[in-house]
Image (cartoon, rainbow, N blue to C red; front, side, top):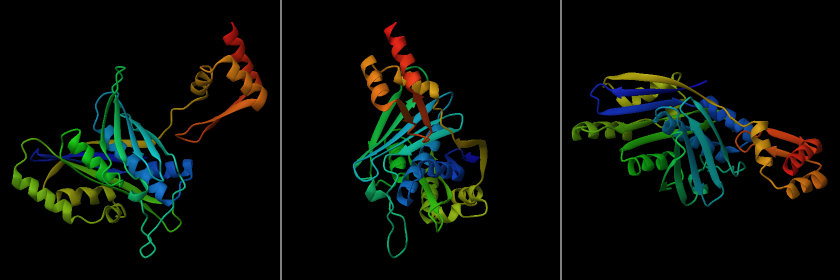
Length: 291
């Protein structure tokens, strides 16, 4: 199970979240059979959504939509405040690396578009906000969203590191935010440290990635841990939910499905689970509609 640590500088002027999201991204890669670039793009989106959901209180749900016009298509993730997250990418088959360095390419395949965040507080009126994609690298797009939409200056670093077989090795990242009243000299000191910090991939490869991330953020400055949260990939799909969706179809559509396809198979986009409905199931739905 993955871990997210919330911390705050002793001064009270900075807070940081650090994450080890390795198991979540591994599960997503396995369920969607993503290739290298798609794995990294989907993984970064999941990590970004973990950060946003962890920033909420109460029983809330956060949906992140990274809507691009290039090869990846849309990337959708849904997370709640109980540590559950799911997600998918429209095109799981993007697999491009730089020839010289074998570095996985992500940003150019996101294209132009929007970083959309939908927060559902359970009141029946979800709140939606968005900012333009500035790079398609997801981490930079999240930082821009937090700074522009939520008016909280933020630094974000997140990544997914693959092994030589393009399987997820480690995944995670951090978010650092400036809180009201922070003196300019302290902001400059943190900015300098963030600019000089090692690559996120290197920090994630450390024996204790959470500790390595905290050390890189705070240096020798004191901080305290506020909380620790556990996270995992979990989909809330069910046969009942998809059956309810089928029942919204008209009698004619259900009859055609029964006669031409002899049943129905529905695949959950978020986890790949398949649900089968045979001719008898469809006949019962048709009969119910006729009553």
